[in-house]
Image (cartoon, helix red, strand yellow):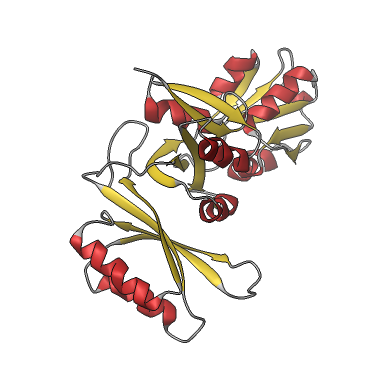
Length: 283
């Protein structure tokens, strides 16, 4: 069987690559892209059959840029995986912890390791575009007074040394990743549906919108608001709920919501809650 090509943001060894390999197992070829926009473009153009993006972290919260890109691009969410994130402190061979003056990583990773970083009196956090990219930079520039925060796989990929592992402030550190495709997902037995909608800016509009799900005992899993460009103080609402969009209660709720909302789009119905260990969780 031909392998799927999956686009992800970052360098080899990035957590998005690890999530892609966990989700698709051996049947995947990974395609690094420099920015999230390029992941969407690769799938939209057909150069890659799938894309994977982080959408939220259990400690640092949502990745708002990717919510905006979901709205901008007409792709379908076809799966999700929740990956346990274990951060490691990586240096060039021969570098000791006392040598470190700068710690490089993606801003989210730095935020997730804030307690550890604050404990290093002589080192400061320095944001870069990618966790694995920070490791690549350490090696290519032979930085002797710096360290990177990234995955253990990134250290192995670039032949660098791990000084400490598990440096995240909270070990219950998970990132939820979404799988993107040009085609809709097949019907899933344990479905989660993601939508985005807007309402009129009048009293009670959001309450009425959410009540269409409560009336039908549909469990809401997440709601996120993002500003509508060009319309100050008006918002899109991203909503995840249990069930498939074609299930009769969900379909009726969506039809009801269309009567209230000024716009509504189903981003995808897909199998929910799959962790890297393969288990399905209700949330």
